Length: 207
Image (cartoon, rainbow, N blue to C red):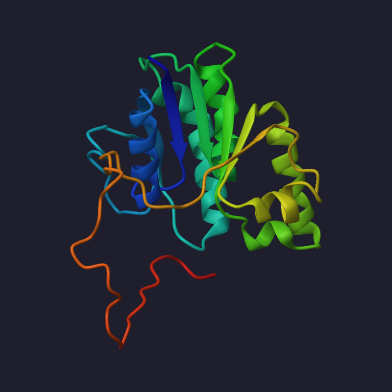
């Protein structure tokens, strides 16, 4: 069984739960580690007890940089006793910064996958901040074996033009995922469209 160390920026993010389900459906065993946006540590996600790297805050970029630096110094102790993974998946740039430290903690050459499902506005700036962040990403991604992203536009308009990463790309769109099979002849009881007024929900963060 493939053993994956999944490093995430927010353990409570519903998308993390979805990715864990996908990895398990593919037959992988998972160790979950990451930051949290809650006051108290999270007990479990999909039956997995996560390795808590501490709290971070939405919109507090400087605080998150400090949290990453603090986690980098203690990651060896945090991962002591964990099984050596066959693969490390780093979700977002801040976790990519910890992936190499995690690999060294296991004393092995474990391949790293960079999962980037959102392009932060700061990396698109043309000032010193934007150039510094893009330079950091290029440096951290130099040994990445695969880039996982959710939109071809991210590749066409960011990763390729800025030369951020040379690794192969795997496109996994943000779609509903369910492990239950759907019969080929499945039909809803009523296929007719609902009568207006229609209500459309938007769920997520707007930046």
